[in-house]
Image (cartoon, rainbow, N blue to C red; front, side, top):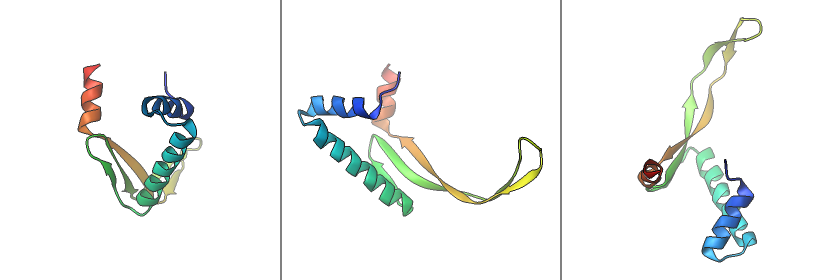
Length: 94
């Protein structure tokens, strides 16, 4: 079972004794900072927990799955999330 955003906001609000509105605003701000920095090519790192960075993908030749014809796929960017040591240790315990 996965936790959705509203469940995450409610859980953080309960743990921190803040309102859900305040927690939601902080979460929005965190994601905005991630977007701003990663789109510039900067890495965002929260030591022990996670790192988010932009990666580059080279242009390549692919195949159309319906026709089998070769197609050129343009170079692009992707996002890489890396789990930190504290997160990995917490998952390993369970």
